[in-house]
Length: 308
Image 1 (cartoon, rainbow, N blue to C red):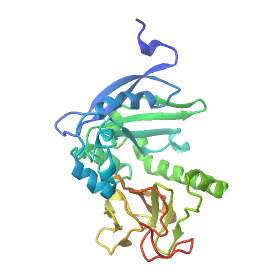
Image 2 (tube, helix red, strand yellow; image 1 turned 90 degrees about the vertical axis):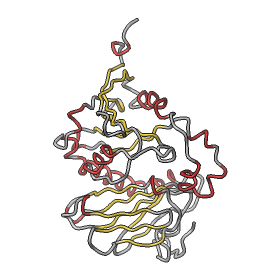
Image 3 (cartoon, one colour; image 1 turned 60 degrees about the horizontal axis):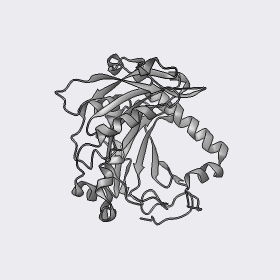
Image 4 (cartoon, rainbow, N blue to C red; image 1 turned 60 degrees about the vertical axis):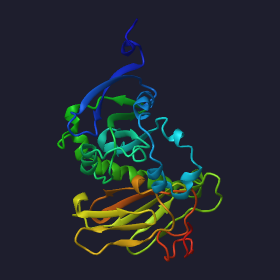
């Protein structure tokens, strides 16, 4: 038989496995992927790996609260691949992105924290715990779409070009998204509203601003231009958020306008100079609209009481 990677349109690409067991070395792996399908072949391939393990009902209840009673836990064990972008495509990085691929239900399976992957995320400006085995791959976006390209062992170095530019690339992506939002106005919001006809606007205050979709809440907190990830302290609870700089009074500290999934919440630092800010993303436990980010605060729509 003809080797698959010699077939036109198929390319053999290298990606990495970071095992959650620190005593197991990081490994280079390869996959023969269709180049016009982006990372679709890789995600399909990894589904089998992530179908291992059993969901812990107590962990599900902790994350989902009362919603867990109506869930078929076997569905969560079928192997769902979650993608987490370490860096997003931008003009400064040649429109390439480096992504984590992880078990979407890793936390619910009580998989151990992956220290090496979590540290790599911190070096890219993110601070979220990652659990279980983590795979790392790179995509490039071009005129013909997205395609996988090699991500090798040497790319794990803190001196690698992609890592040095990660924070800037993420900020450029944020600016591009904001520009699209401003240009499309209400039509942009309508895309994110699903079946909800009301306006899911957020609010702007002296110390932070926030926006939302039916599934997520995004908070931006201005911080000094010299601050780095190691200077920041963020704590997520189901109904509470505390965020600020280490050794100082919190910039945000209060009850949330709804319930979130703490292990699905992340933060990063974006922007530079006067635009430097802490970017907090929180996944809602239940899809819908919050009337306020923090209880008791009046938002841009004029509402003052939060919905749960």
